[in-house]
Image (cartoon, rainbow, N blue to C red; front, side, top):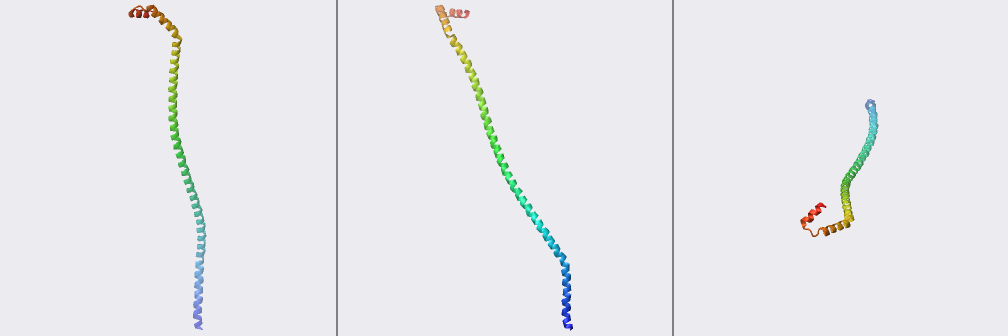
Length: 148
């Protein structure tokens, strides 16, 4: 009977040790399970945040591209503005010159009109002077012209 009792005792003792180890490991298993759940939640949050970061980075890249396009457009507008300003300055200068030329032509034309109005009278007056003073010497004619 002691032969059957020895292994039975060892078996019972090992069952008790197993029960003690199992009871001491059970809280650790529960803690591992709880940590795995927390890790899953943390991974979900991490993935959500990474997705949001990727979306924000994409938005930033788009904004940078739009900004670069706007800056390029502004530079083109500045160059065009400079060209237009130069053309306007030239046009104003041309208009000023043409106005001055028009005034000069108007004055010249008025003078010419006055000459044309007086041409017949001046011609008759010159003819009368030459007819009257033609036989005098040059110095005498000049003296008569200054007195007249």
